Image (cartoon, rainbow, N blue to C red):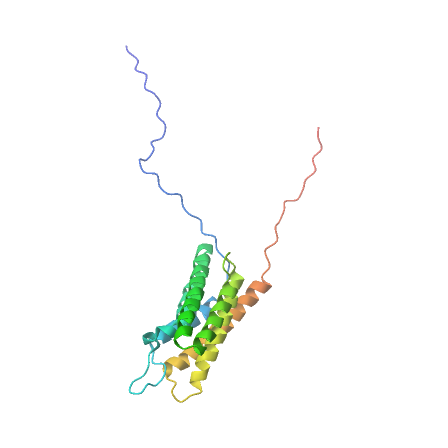
Length: 210
């Protein structure tokens, strides 16, 4: 009788290595998200609504790219508050930095064309860059940027509300700007009052050596 020795085989391996699951780090619960996100989304929608009365027909902000900044900021904050991961937070900060630099570049071109209004926009763009910073990822800076954008947008749209040429887009933009301002203040208060959870260490146990 012949005995055939069969080598023991290990567990079969797949020809395709599946990627390891990625763990997303969450930034924590924030109560301001519904207010800030809703206000930002409403502000962006106002981009496509009639803003002021024209000579023969209403003027829509979407036809005037030089005034897109508050609306696009609203969209970024709407997406930024919808995410709860640390990676989404970083993407939002990068988008806010890009918008701040685009504001400065657009203001430089506006200075050449009009002078005074371009200088005002250049100062605003510089302040936005200072608030969001040029490096690092800080959620507190996002809250400060939301406060600044909400306050400046509220001032801008509020000036149109008190005139006779304001239409539904300006009124809704004013409400959205106020909501973004309040949401940013609540956001900043949450970050200021937040305390990290205490680290619980196991109790030490003494053992007698035998």
